[in-house]
Length: 255
Image (cartoon, rainbow, N blue to C red):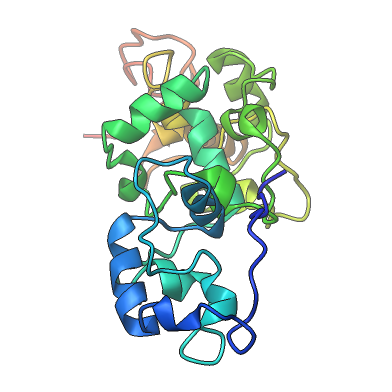
């Protein structure tokens, strides 16, 4: 389960005999916001003593009940000032990126997070440190699914061959393919969305090479009997690499 419920049973604002001992909503919230908590699940662990800090005696463990008529605006507002809240990328985008890191386990994930890598920002992504909490009820299925450790990804050459057969004509088409926006194709789960990261030291050359764009263009030119302007077709048709007439290009220019 993504979340856990607090075991604290507390009365509401009007029927609490101890309401006078609590700080005002603004004072309590100001203190709570210094705890660096972001999710309700973290608050539940905090009030249960599972985190390092302890709850001050004058702050209620059930603020949603105690302050419900005196300033309460939800857990996000209670735990963090809105100017510090991040707008995270969608679950699917973030998971696709993380899988390309080829991390083996949660320990590797923690190491990656501690490094404060900005590589995800390079791709316009904002990935949460605690994806299990951020994406709870938004697609989260567990750490194995998040890291992709249970998926049988193919090697670089096998995957590139498959991709080239799709005859995608540009990087933008690749992006739409990964997002599921190309009606004629659906990206299999075992295809990395960021192959330039996943295969960085395992065969990656360039996007043109990955998509086979050069091959596509050359095939198109061949089928159209492509000739540059003012050029003449050589009798060897480009089949002789050291041809004295065309130097293996298949065409020549008259002097």
